[in-house]
View 1 (cartoon, rainbow, N blue to C red):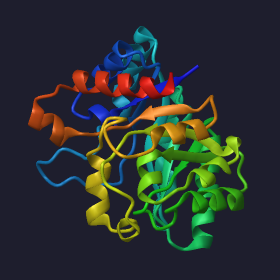
View 2: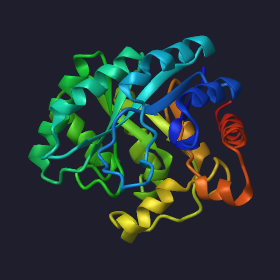
View 3: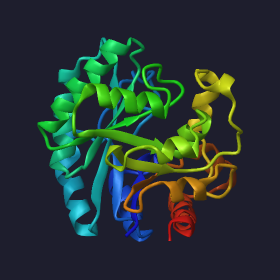
Length: 275
């Protein structure tokens, strides 16, 4: 069985209710939503992520039930030494109330000892609400740039509810090999994210924020780029949960592509690999 979740970042210009409706229309069985963001939006500008506020919970839960859609991951929790983890408690509770499986965490703490402590503390808090923690590695998070770092942090933290979120874009941009992915214990893989990109691996770009972020926010539909998606998928366990995270607002605006059209294309392309 293929578990497909439509990530809100793929269609970030639609409401949460529309996200659920599009997921149902395209044959996804779940969605990934944002319940937290550490950014401070500039005056007059919309936040980078479409956040689900607590006041929206009741209506969103009704929409999920009506359309037969569940929630896989709730995004995005940044772990740093100065992060007030207690502020995350209500966001984790919100995710749990909506039936989420896991909370996605990004580690921006470069100190190794503090990083392990943060992973342990956040995992303990998530466990209070029955949530797993998906640690997402990427080049621009100094505390967890690679798959090897993520595995090491999880092992040192020693918590059984934390695993890895393996995003094909970040695996490609950080040079993750298929051998490394194959060596990942299946129990440590919480989910994978599918997308594509035309940019080749460049070791000088791994920690270059100005060059890395635009690639993360404008992605290609699976099959349109150069990532060896079929090899990644063959290497991952058969029961992997897949999130479709393909933000492409600039491309869509340029070509007049609606959120529904984009989602249908992304889901269809993903199924051509997964089925």
